[in-house]
Length: 186
Image (cartoon, rainbow, N blue to C red; front, side, top):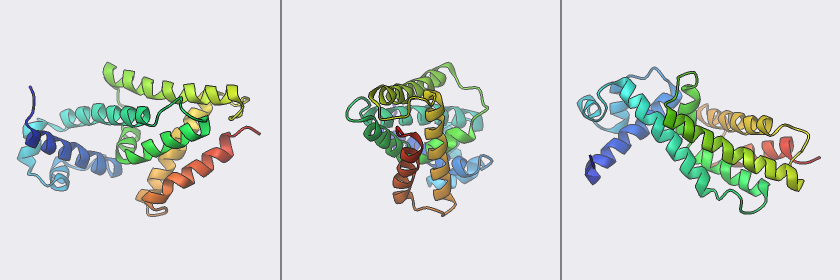
């Protein structure tokens, strides 16, 4: 069923609010999400019958948004360090969704979500391996280790912005600086 543009905006507002609220506190109520979205609780229930439906929709939407942002970062074009910089910026751009996905670890993803998550990781690992072959990244470090470092440092940066330690507009640079020092060829 195709939603009208107004209903699409309302659904998007609910998902955006849920991402922001649950990224900070996974226990936030649907009423809190409704308030953050600027809608009533009944409106949230019209789109998502219960908390689990909203959480499932947000998980799928978050993986899709992250995948789209990373694909838009143009993997394969330019030096690997430039690509990783763009991927980091993409991850920071969808920051609440990344934090939500981290907060949701441990929950069993749907097959479709697991497929998209795998595609995200494949893009990143492929770039890391390209960088190791081209001599930009340290070839003695396992590619999956570097991939996990990227995720960890992005998470740390996003969490630091929520804590007020770093401004959201400056966290990209700090993440990139940290990563380059850790993964560049020696």
